[in-house]
Image (cartoon, rainbow, N blue to C red; front, side, top):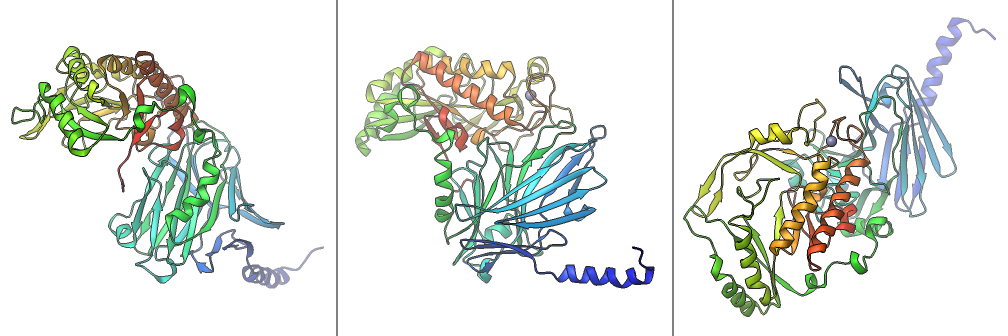
Amino acid sequence: MKYPRWALAIVLPLALCVTGHASPATLETRGLRISIDRASGDIVSLTAHGVEMLAQPSRQWVVRLTDPASRQSQWLDSGHARATEVSVGAGLIRVRSILQDAGVTVEAVWKQDASGGLTARCSVSAPPKAILESVTCPVLKLRATVDGDRDATRLFMPGGDGFIATHAGMVKNPWAGRSYPGWASMQFMALYGARGGLTVQGRDRQALPKAFEAPYDAGSDMVEMRIVHHLPFVLGRAFATPTALLSACGPSWQSAADIYKPWARRQWWARRKTGDAAPPAWLSTGLLTMGGHLRPFGMGKRPVEADQWPEVVRRLKEAFGASGVLLDLREWEHDGIYTSPFYFPLYPSDEEVKRILASVRPLNARATAMVSGLQWMIERKAYTTDTYNVTAFDGRERFEREGRQVCVIGRDGQPDIAEPYFTWDGAKARMCPAHAFTQAHFPATARRLAEAGFAIFEFDQMNGGQCPPCYSSDHGHEPGPGPWMREAISRFMAATRKAGRAVSREFATSLEDPCEVYLPHLDTYISRAGHT
Ligand SMILES: [Zn+2]
């Protein structure tokens, strides 16, 4: 049937008007209610315990599409879609959008979950001419002042042991983001006030590369809470995000953790370790930790001279009534602290370190060696004070000769070199975890340190197992972020533990701010309270 043009002119605006005012599609679970606009697919309301959490309508997702030749990216959301279709089923809402120009269809599905929360998943079809570099889902533009109470508002982020930001803290330090597996040690964050709030959690058993982000925007007093999934740099590949769970939580980070724990404890990384996999018993004997330096400070002395160690350890134990001591003995590297990866022979010599460690062992004292993780030090300036001594280091030639082909290649095709950040720091690249050199380096280092008498090998300066993605096509892994990173890191951690254990049954592994996925390979850890 054909309609005259004037009829369309009346009917069409009327239809739009009706659609625009149609009540949003809603899903409700225990304490949580989400409302989705039927025309745009935007999230228009999200309440937790009846409190509106949303600052403004939120798009369902953001996709990053990259042209493989120019490497130029465009970030697209459902606002760029030619058509969006919202359908409602039993306990679910489906939002389907077509990005006509990119030739991509994106589908977001919200479901009621048996746990009492809501799950979100987003699937993106294969872009025919582009690289799908990231998919962000969910994206929630939340009120940074929860329930109108600025003083009671708290943001929990999963860095290290977890940390909390107050509203004033968010204003002062607006960026909050942690990559996983790595700086984010677990898959959850939360925003809450005096009556509770919202927790956004991952339910990703594969622990794929992602970031938990909650940046603060002062202009609109808003926190954009989102999970960004980082994908391999491969043309024309589709992606479906792992499940994200939204749940109402109480007025504490512990209540959000209580929602996470039952799931996390069922995962492969949280299995109880028994037999050979169990941490050595001596770690649980009530140890006192003490620092020490092998290299003299600027004043020409060490805090404890080599022959004083047994006496100092004995007196320390007496003073505190401790059964044993753990020495954080630094400056054992041949060319100065943190001069990775060529550490040997030890400073001042293998024999001298062996002698010191053997002299305190009868007193139930053992030492940890902080190993500079994946760092490849290239060059460093000296930094010396009366009570500090950082040696100058020039490894530029060796880096060119041996390091360049081993280290992480950035997205721009160049080695990813970080400039010094601290006084003790230098310019350094990171060894690619999948490279054969790296895989051999860690167990070989563990063997030498165990032979010298070190009891703990601590993976330092790669907090949580953090490593930038490598885009090399020569290292035997897929270019860009991918599960290969976690697999390669796990592989050398396991080999390190095995190599050390072959020398000494007491040998143990440790990691700074450990991510949960590496727990199977770790016997202990170090972490800083409030490590933001
Ligand atoms: Zn690589």
